[in-house]
Length: 246
Image (cartoon, rainbow, N blue to C red; front, side, top):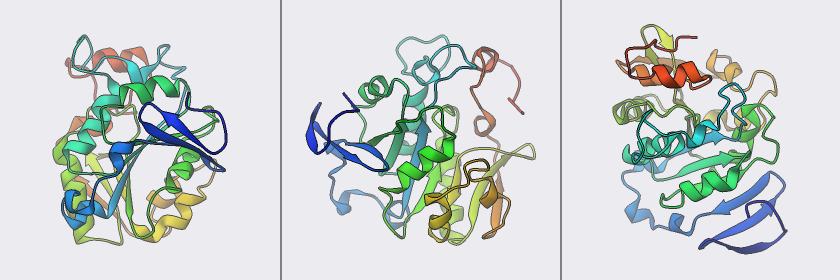
């Protein structure tokens, strides 16, 4: 099980440990050498995927819903989100689970990711960010992609990383049809704010440019605006429905 005892114990081929910030499930596949981690640009960024909520508005547990909708063998929402990051070359991906966390961990067992547990799934998403920051190396940037955003393209992730390399002290946010979306890149300089985010505002304080410059990059990618909150959102995706512009 994901939650449980202090110290360490075996968990499906990995290790589990309990710390103040959450119970950390480390997939042993994460123990890769630096030589296998791609270029320096990608090694200096950790992707964080918050996926701790209960999906109350959806009425079903959205991380495990089939994606794309109506398919059976192509995987689920959380798998698609994680695959996008890995396919883009981000070798360090941290997924923060909560409600039904063990089920998500099992679905992600085939991926090289780190899974952390947020024991308060009803807390704001910022609490999951805080937990994830415990395993982000000092000096690394952070790309945040919520677990219910499976439609983001690999090319958009590449574009953010390219922009981050050119503007290393800026927050990078993709824009579709004039509206911001996900994921967002946060430079190492804002680490302290991510380790202790405002419980009400979360990271919005940072994306308003209060601490460092914010760079918007236009993308022809409706997936950055995809936000699976309700059954209507889920059923309309990529079938001629709305852009989910909320």
